[in-house]
Length: 358
Ligand code: PMP
Image 1 (cartoon, helix red, strand yellow):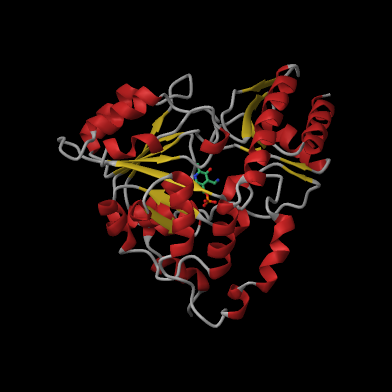
Image 2: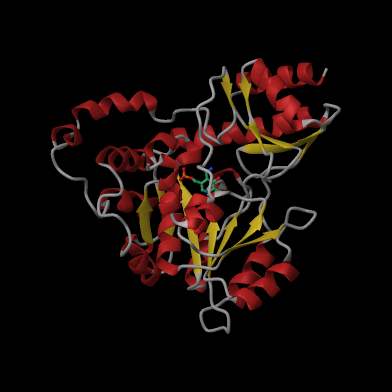
């Protein structure tokens, strides 16, 4: 007799051994687990959309080239539309990059888990190099892995999720230079700037013209629009054209294109919210430093990584009282990651964590 478990034998080995990305909804009062913005920017203008053309043309497919959105991004970032590819979140763009260029894929750890998950799902080799003691790129190990393994893609999340710091600019530049397309081990270096808007560093956009093997990835998810699923790649048009070959024709729906473009044209509210989050991050960090039993790590992002004595127990204690943070077990053992919320949410978190610690 056939058994449903026999289906697993048909699954490709790389996929069979994977676990699904853990994005379950856990009921809570204060949600500080997913690095979202606590502010739904633009919400008071959204009613204006109900009269828009988009609602009268839902029988049509979305613009496959997302021209309006690309034009808004182009003005915003002062780059040409030919340098941009938009995706259904940057997750989709990671998929497309690995589909286009293949492996090996190299990245430092701990970092954003999707680089490794997608590489495995697509049957590509992934190479994880531990960060050094300062959470920066370990140059010796990275350089020797580059020379030995010749990765096609190197993913660098800067600011890095979950450690919160930016990697040193000189180290990133050295990697970009050593893997230049005319070197003996050419590679594309993808600087994932999902959290750049919260950082005091300039980021790599100004350097785009200097290095053909530099790819920059950004997202609207962390600055108030996670529900839209809009991410974008910025790179040399030759790279954009190659990745565009594997893009699904209508990857970004009409609503997302339209709302994201409008949000980008009207950045005041978003910019203000980013400022609020940065100032709350500093306050939260200072308060956490005063709590015995917690070591917070400095952050350039919209979250803070905390080292605590009994991470599992504290995670569960917080959740019991309705406060959801991320338990980094298996990624950064002994650590929790807390997203910066509103002042009120951060105060509830601080009060609760003090209670749970006893
Ligand atoms: N890159 C990093 C470093 C992230 O932390 C995340 C979200 N957790 C993403 C990319 C994915 O973002 P998006 O919502 O655009 O898919």
